Image (cartoon, rainbow, N blue to C red; front, side, top):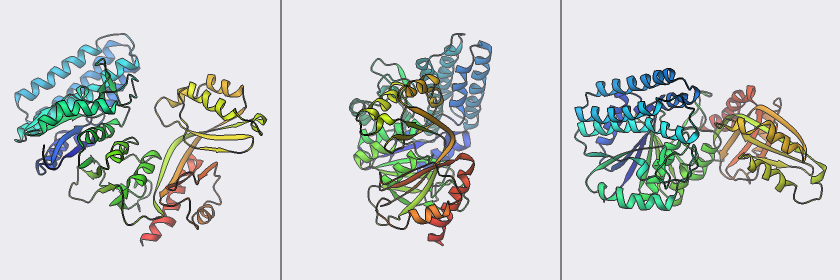
Length: 451
């Protein structure tokens, strides 16, 4: 094994076309420690594959296939790849075409199989590119290594089994080769294709880094670093050069899209340093995420998560009685609904649902609300946004809440959660007011501190 092992993951925009792939290959070429390369599907391909479930018309499905085929053949031609790469790509394309020649509806299991083709196509092209540049790289099918349960659409990884597969199949190759594999996809114990959910490529890379006891996990994307807030909302946002695992985890959970929320769990378990950088401008400083740093500002960043739903249940049965909350959360569990924030009074409970998640709108069904109404009066509020101030010691630092609420004295705040974590203070506002709130808070708590 090499003395230093880096796992490098390249996102969809980083491998979007031939020029983007060439930039990524150059990043790998200059660093021999990048031993495992994980790639996403080319930008837009997963959406095209997802659209196959929207029609049962074979001709419409074939039209989608043609778009995917044309996109990847164009990349192949622009890379001037050798004949072997073209042959390997065509094998995958032929398999995809065979899968879509049906008028049957796709269930979630079939969709996992279809969605896997995005990563399989991009990794085939990228492996050929690396070898063409003289980098000894071998294609590995992630489904042979990333083992999961059978929860199709959002599978849970089997960490111990992944480690065994990595030790047996991956480690021996790393002595002499680089390995190219796919993010997002895996397989269950029966060998059936599964996916880790949208954005799961980061998670795949982190799981491989954990199994390898890697020194560094690199996430290469289209942004230079993690910023103090979304620069599209606030042009004054500043790049963060270094932050802790705790801060990054809070930011990813509360809406920052640079990292998948699950990515940091494997890195934290093994204390693996994480680097986030731009594949477009690789020489510009990115963000290092580590366990401990010396400077821990009270407020590091501000995140925004749209499409939130607030459910408030009111019942006198809560008053001085036990068991009500158990009934409430059992109903939510029965409908596979996960809750983010919870506040309670003596006779009311308010909780937030992230309806920005795929499929969550459907789970908030009339049937679920009917079940809730059997135990309480229910009020549902939609078109809300969750804003989180992320930093350090927010549960024990004076002088934060006062200025915050003074700044927002004209804003209707629907829910506040403060004190449950030392790393965040969060609240709900109307979605139409959210971006203005973020700009105002960033100016007061971050821009003024820097200037």
